[in-house]
Amino acid sequence: MDLDSLTTLGRHLQQLRFASGLSLSQLAAEAGIAKSNLSRLEQGQGNPTLDTLWRLAVRLNVPFGNLVAPISVSLGDAGVQVRLIDQGKDNPKVDAYWMSLSPHTVRQAEAHSAGTSELITVVSGQLEVGSLGQTKQLSAGQSHRFAADQPHSYRTADAWATAQLTVIYAATERAS
Image (cartoon, rainbow, N blue to C red; front, top):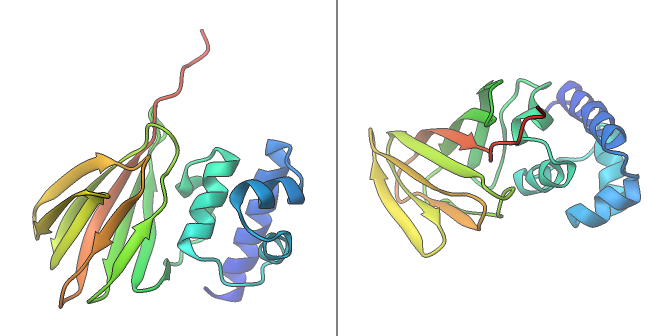
């Protein structure tokens, strides 16, 4: 990630933390990362992994897309790149991402917020995806929806795979 994107992400992360009323120590502990690493992220330094960013979004109780919306670069690590395409404004919240996975990639994703599901449509290549123990092999044009509020995985074989990933968060109750 370039320096401008890191700086923008860091400022936004700090604003979300302030809005949630969490101290640096509290958020770091709840997200399972070192306080010094969180401090560096907020200062626009470091190179956060997708898992770190997801854990921060979950602990801040915001959709992942809300955390990364201010930046327009792809995020990734270990053979996986994701880019936010759009965020819905309705209830439930829905985020759409473009996802690219290199050959021989295995991505183990942590559980997202309670009630979250994912719908993935493979655009090219082949991808094995789903909740652990309940994965499905998909080819171009095929889709699969699964519970993302439990650990899940994405696995490619010998070729690149691209997909459109839709994350559907649990609906929230609206005040009357």
